[in-house]
Length: 336
Ligand SMILES: *Cc1c(COP(=O)(O)O)cnc(C)c1O
Image 1 (cartoon, rainbow, N blue to C red):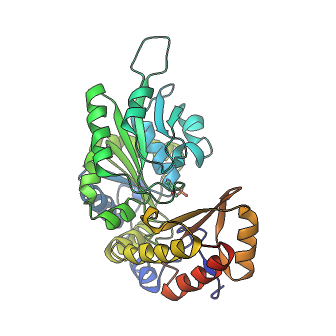
Image 2: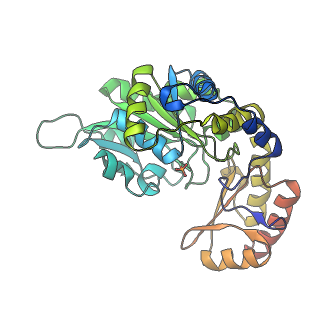
């Protein structure tokens, strides 16, 4: 395994030795009883980082998204999002199946917020004829668009629009940490744009598991009930929350290294490095499956996220030497 450079996803990180040590010594209690001090510390810390009242620890980002969206969109109401958003494409219909949520989308080649498009889609309550728009979801950074960062002015423009018409904003911030490190925008500034958020500890931050819903105290109390109803009330999970706290202490600023490694890959893969803002490089190729297979035979794992789209994601588990190896291999397969 050690000689493989695995760029399929930043979910593939393994906990470091010091993270494992923090997990082993975590103080725990029964979190369904609200008695796990480590989980509470993580929830309070994450809430404070984003300037919200409270947060709720979840096993996955998909569940955090379902709970967050469920707080702002009732069954039979509508969520507007970008067409390649994770909530629309990669959660296996969870919002429809579990939440009765319908979706309409705008499309942007870089996955970005388009306030004019949202304005065009937005549907006020018009009685028993049309689905009412209850919320707008925005993904920051945008995964399938290549780790793009939502410009702050667009987010603030969207907030102004939401306030104008009285709708809510959900931010899928699975990789909000990457946006923060890439731009220097404070997490609380991103937090101020959203009514509810979902953030992941298990991507570039390197925790083995863990995401949080972020929002106001009443909303988190409601999400806590629904989390249990969906079967995700957890017991002595301070052992997992400790990994998240360790990641917040040690793995946020280092995301800059992942971003630098992504620049190296972009350059080698013939992708404009200026378009690679964080840790995800997306390249268009004639045959994605062939590139994946050829790269694998040379010890570099990347993924096909479409028939002609290859994705490489840098992370904690890939050092400079690994990134240089991958750049050499991928550069040979994808003429710059
Ligand atoms: C990974 C990810 C999630 C959550 O995924 P899980 O695998 O359920 O933890 C949500 N949104 C985005 C943009 C993601 O990349």
